[in-house]
Image (tube, rainbow, N blue to C red; front, top):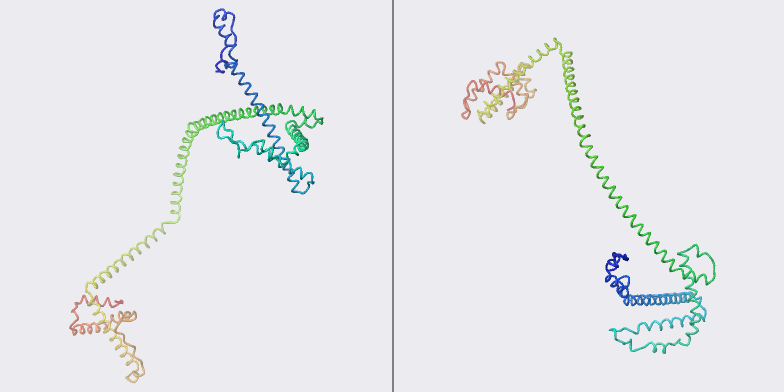
Length: 419
């Protein structure tokens, strides 16, 4: 309502008054009934009276509250001194009276606990007069007040001076009488209000500065985003576009250089070959190659023959191993007898035979030495005789198969190696 009235014009021109006479008379009547804020003058007076009463009540409560706290602090100081043992007998008596007086005065605040607004019941039915009548230190109250009031005033005066020095340290250093201290105390509320207004203005200034910093931050942030966008555009449209062309040119250059280096390497390789392989060297290498090819062909032929022999051996079956073992035993007997004949011829009779040791006969296995002797003995008449004995032995055995001349030749070849 107040904001609505404030938006209306406060003055009227003479032309408007003459044009709207009834409206002017209505305004005059409203001025007599209403206040400037739109409320009735009666309610405005009641509100002002209530505000004054509230202010006086708050002022009285604050004074009583400060006095109560000062008395508690004074009693606490006395108790501390009593614990330290620095109190005299009179001070101890004063402390006891002080404690009891303060306690009985506090009891009056706990008597009333109304359960409703119109209730007048008290704690145990006691009243303030009963508490005052039962107070044991009632007779000491006049003397107690004469002692406590100066002490309380001195403590309050000191606190007021300290509080004034806190808010105005320069003027507080000026020495003066009690009248000057009273003036300072009277000006202290205005000084505190002024300091409060200053703090409020500083808080508003800080709030405005913070809002301005926030706006600047977001402005800088927006500008930074725009700068990044422009930088990204420049990189994509200019730097990267030209960089692709530069990279293509570099790739072409490096490709051509690699091809040139490859050709140079091939040329160097051909030169090295020309310097290394002369016409005579090529002819010699060709002859060596022909010789190696011939040797390879010979080895391949031998390998083919050996493979054919092995296939034939595997085709005969397990009976061929028995034939080979029999042939080996007979071959060994022939060698032993030949050795004995040679010894007889060498020593000219049987006398030397008793002094010579006959080599042991091994008819179970065929060693590498017997293979060599077998291959040597197969080249003369002894080989023919051994073959004859072998064929004769084969014919005499009923469980040995008959072999052809081709099988016998294969048998002769196989006995050269360890079966």
